[in-house]
Image (cartoon, rainbow, N blue to C red; front, top):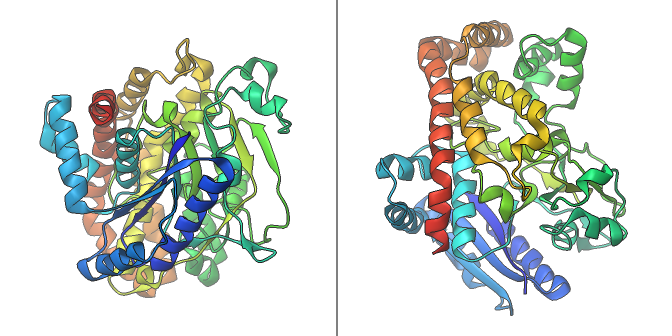
Length: 429
């Protein structure tokens, strides 16, 4: 029986999502014969977590579906045991990177990867608490329909099974390493208000995540595509392709990875940084590992907290840190794309030591491009006025700190990638 981890990291109230995720787990067990470990990693406050506990208790017992609802204390205890068993230096630094006090999109998923390994799972299937399943003919549209049949198997098997493919023949012996789709509904990054206030400012700000030397036409195309997912058209019928999946066509709220990927390389553990959990999508693509791109898109929505007086500046800071992180990540992505299959060993598995080298190389880049990014954000937000101008004032006070964090986040990531094989082995045993 194929044991898989269906995972929901959350720091907000989402009892309805927990019930819906359990429905997907039941579907996976009954229709695909999977042994589903439903993992809820709960970083919510005490009151919200108590609501989630009641929601979990109300779930109907189902054969081959096991629910794990873990608060941060339980997660931290597990991490400390794994780090101690791994015998790695700087154990407190590792625990901090895996479970930081601030929001980290990568760290919460890394904990899921490590726990999935401890549970003996062959894959991780991630969903988000601020999204929901589409309905078609009154039934929920579950992504596991496309994730479970071929993940981890040779791409040739998926092609022989009738899955349409555009893979080059030379790639068919490589394993299907991810399966994913995107989302419909609101932008994945909550900056729609900027576009409503001023289209020109929106273009200027969103375009800052492109490499600094891109021509304007290419930058404009990126802005048009950014954060829009699959648009707004609802699901009407299945489409799936065996391919090398374009990272722009999938989203981390709707993704599944084979263990051979996440047991080799974790996600960046950067705190307060939007998009810090997308690295593996680029790695799988650039290494030429096959994936399944399907259209069972999840419906995205925004929670109101991001627009409150306290939530707004915190969220905007995460967005700015994302823009600054791209100086380093574009450097790494370019080199991964150039190396291609050279990123893989003879078993078609990622050479994690090479990723460490590329990350460390990127920490020596000149900061001029990021200074330019901060200047552009400052100008744009002051043009918008109101709370955006107030945020620009705060940003001005933090410039040096933000530039330092963009670099130190990559140093931390390189350190975690280097330690990851020992952590995985400790979790497995």
